[in-house]
Length: 50
Length: 507
Image (cartoon, rainbow over all chains, first blue to last red; front, top):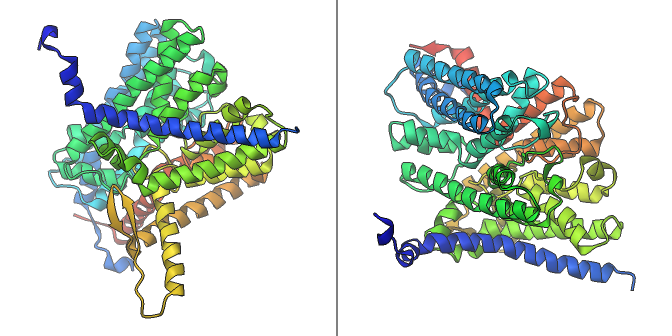
């Protein structure tokens, strides 16, 4: 298949589940970091002397 | 009970030996890859060490194949024994390369480094990692990727094996024991595919982070590639003796967290999610327990570190406390804290919480070690079932189930299996700790280092070094090997040997 025949749209369509799956797993990691960031913010807020 | 087991036949040894020859061929071929790195970086003096290691592996494989040739198919017992032996044979030939390249102080150190690599542990006895030839450093990381990240046994059998059943059984022996899909050759390809996909993503992200931190493209790419291999494999080797702390980079740590979390997920889950069942990621019992336990450990460690005033800022708490909790739980071993800080400055509670995280580990069927969250989940579900049973009338039958890719009834056999492995794990952990204490180390340090070796983690309290006693190095080599095989395979191997000795080998 030549470059001219390559369609990014088709590629996305064909591999949508795979790409979306990879993104979901990365989102899970981001979610964990987000929850921890929030927890730490709360902890430092509660733990601050003032 | 031994009299009930049929005696070993010569054919049993042939089946194991012949399958092992495939591992030797593949491991020999893989040992040639660092030569490309050596040529690129003009490290011509170390090339013979890779060639000799590779040739020795292929020669040994040929001997096995010649003398133990058989057409008979594997059974479960052969696969389990073969996996147990393979995890000693493959590191042995890699250790020859390390030793000949003068990368480590002694042959025992070379073997330790090699076993630590193949098992995805990450404890290191290399003296000056920063000044190792790049090709040798690449080999350290590459071993973790092929050994733990994509599973050398699965690849060898899917590429060189005769039928699909061989790899299904070998996969069991490799302790990734729930089996992903009926078509196992396809499964192996999926495992390799997922590994390579995250390798590309991780390398790209690390390279961008490296460029942002001022590294030149070549260094950023090379170190990014190495870190991605060990991050996804939840291995923990890094190209620098200060581990991830060397970079002092928030972005490196963020990319590392992504890879560690993804690497700790179950391959069954990967398969479901990448196949379109994206909702599975939050429905899966194992992921829920992993998240919950991680949040408990991470928050308690952070709160403890905050209240003793060690890291007063939110950023430091995240980059030290939370990062170490994730690294321990996923059994990766990337370290953003110096070992002596961990042991002499961190409060005991935080250190023990990290030990608990390392012992419990990541998901089953993943690149991580430890008891595994699926087993922890089954045991917790069983506990709830027992409590419910106690509260119900005697005639009531209480059942349990859990969601793991599909709804699965919790059977007594599953609970028994999970309890046996958890118990064996805890016994070995206690013995390892006692042996370390016996060498004159403190209890806290000993628990930490033993949990790290047995859980294939790689975090260090400072005990693991080239100067540690040779007997302790040998004990940790055994623990890393046992942890990688989830202990049971070693019992099967021991049973196999005892059976051979007691009853002899029939023609």
